[in-house]
Length: 264
Image (cartoon, rainbow, N blue to C red; front, side):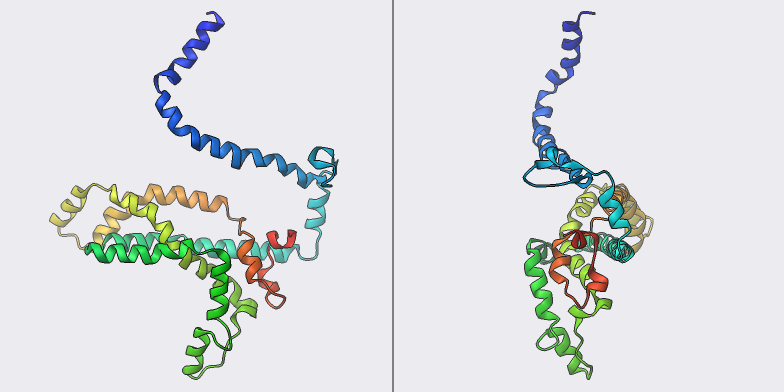
């Protein structure tokens, strides 16, 4: 078969479905530009990078930087904190949006449902700086609302932001509060796709609301749960930098020092 004929045959499916390819092209362009192209800079980790020489001009040093990191005094503390925060975040932050979506889905009053969705979505749009500022303000040992309540009930003020034992819980729970509403959207969409006839059949069989949630809703969104769980596990070492850095101080360093802040 001539090369021109083979090319025409290969291009035929593209020509037949060109609208679909045009529709998906912005997504492909996004990943190529913002996800794949930046991987060019990964080689900095294996070079003695000098900005004036550029990436290609800098000397290749292999695994020297990794060896220095592995042999570092704080290596095990960094690994423990990074994995500890990630696993804590996964254990607490992953199921909460599912539970929230299941509860919102059961609300029958439309105005109340919209109100709950608005209230739970709103924190997602707060910047990290604003969120940490709120944490410092609410948890202040002198004027913070939480400590005022503790003192009111006869307790002693707690300096939450400087106690290493509180760091992980504050970090994770504030993140759950900020993201649970936004993360529940995909589960609500999956719940909306469940066939209503399944619920009608369950009602006829005498199933209670809890039984319908357990035997109809959860199996219906299980594929979505599994996919998102895999994606979350895949980024288990990516604690992030900005929020940890803003919450970090010299007194809680024992619990807050993670790989990203150490590298910085």
